[in-house]
Length: 227
Ligand SMILES: [Zn+2]
Image (cartoon, rainbow, N blue to C red; front, top):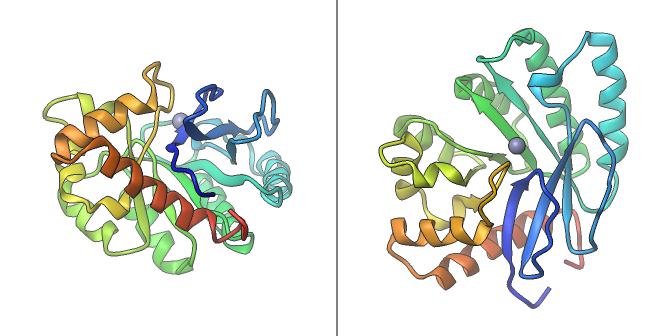
């Protein structure tokens, strides 16, 4: 693609802005409704919604099927120590999806709450070639340094507007080639996130737009050859 778009790497709503390319999370509904040609999707099992292992296995096979479709990332999936689903099962399902992503050359959108060390341990075990993207990233600066040394990327949204939150220190620390923006469930547009990001990084909006577009092209080129 020759044009440069804004990228919303993780959203639950339908993108109607023609200047934005969005990765819309279809979660475990696993249905592509209201799709528009320019958008990408993510399909995966969220740690909040896990069921019994047998049921999860059925859903996993659906994720495996969906991930063979052209414009589909794996996610959001991940680990969450704050929710009540069994943590061992969370790890099993996350790892299984990471393997699906690897086999189909897809990036993963990761939901991670208080479990960065566990995600890193699975990463080191699998040694993936694909990019793993933390959405709504809010790790400590020490954790950010460790993760940034590996093939992780970091997506930021509403947290950029909360003064004093850990995410801002990490955001300022990270190089542009590790950063994405997202709206997730926010009502703000992703352009607002770029604007706030550019303010915090003291660079122009346009420089950020170019850098993030480059990041997106790089990860998408791994599974769409003519992108
Ligand atoms: Zn989300």
